[in-house]
Structures are given as C-alpha cells and as structure tokens.
Image (cartoon, rainbow, N blue to C red; front, side, top):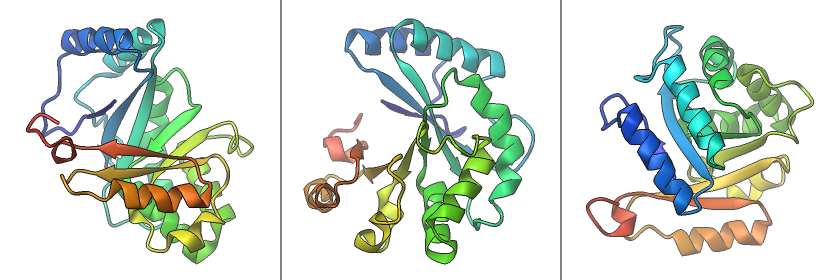
Amino acid sequence: MLVDLAAYGRIPSIPTFVAFIKLLSRLKINQVHLYIRLSVSPAWQLLYTVGELITLDRHCRDRGLQLVPALDILQPCSLADLDQYYPVFSSLLPCFSTATYIHLGPCLSSVIFNGVKSAGAQQAFRRLRSCLGLPGGSQESCQLQLCSNTITNIAAMLDQLPPSVELIDYGFQADYPFQDNGIKLARSGCSRSVCTGTSAWNCIIG
C-alpha cells in the first residue's frame, strides 16, 4: 500500500493511521510505502514529527508490516546535484527501522536513469548510495525500487541495472497499458511490480 504524504493532500492523523495499519495487517498487507516529496531545505519537511514517524514504524513492525520510505525530489536536478539532498535524507531515513528496501519516486528515478546514460551505472548508483547514506558495499543488501515510467529506452537500460534494482510501473489512468508494459519488463527478467492509482481502479476512491 502506498500512502502519499504530500502536504496538499489528505494526511491521516496518527490515531487514524494506526487504525489503518491494524486493518492492513489483518488483510495480510506486508508493506506500507510512505511517498514523500522533498526539497533541499534542511528543515523537517513532513507534517508528521520525527517521533510520530518512529511511532508509525513501530506499529508497523509490531504487526508484521514494513514501513518503506518512498523518496522523491523536486526537479530539475542532475546527478551532480544529488549530494545536496544528503542532509535531508540523512535526517529522514533513520526514522525507518530497516533500510533494506527504499522506493525512489519518478523524479528521483529519472535523475538516476539519466545519470546511468551520462556517467554509467556504477557511478550513478555509487552517487545514489552516497546521497542516501548507504555503505558502499550495501548495494546488494538494500533493495532499490525505481520508477520504470521514466526510462526512454528500456531494452538498452536494463542490462546496466544492478540486480538489487526492482522496477515499478506507475499508472493512474483507467486505460493505462499495464499488460503491455508488464510483458516488456517480464521479458527482460528484471524484478518488477505495479502501482495502480485512482482511475486505474475505475472508481472515484481508487
């Protein structure tokens, strides 16, 4: 389950979110992704405090769920500019009890894919790991989920991605071609998943 924490959206209160986590646990959902768009400002940017975020993480962990950071940034940004996000990420990621799975949103994924094209995969993912504060040897132990929608040439790009990368296909339109995209990614052998939005479920509440 992905929950968008955009300040202009509908942010549930902590008691409501905890009740939601309990319900997801009963439904055997095992991950909750918190989608967070960040600027380079060093100030805390979430509507939840550090303590509230840690509380949510604890409630998830106690009920067999993993609270996953789904990080995104404001564009424009290049691979060389990514280091300026280190203070932001380093203050946020310790709120999550596990760093074995990190979800990158469309804008941040685009920066990485463009970096792979211009500087090569090794340098692009080294810069990403540095920006996220991950140890240099943790690329295999930390699963990275990137948005496949931002790849212009999937066939050429897939061979360069490390095995720790999983691709996610975002779709919010009722007629989004999930099947066609899924077939292309399946033939690549790359680990993959889908993220369906409101219209894709063909109802107003998604």
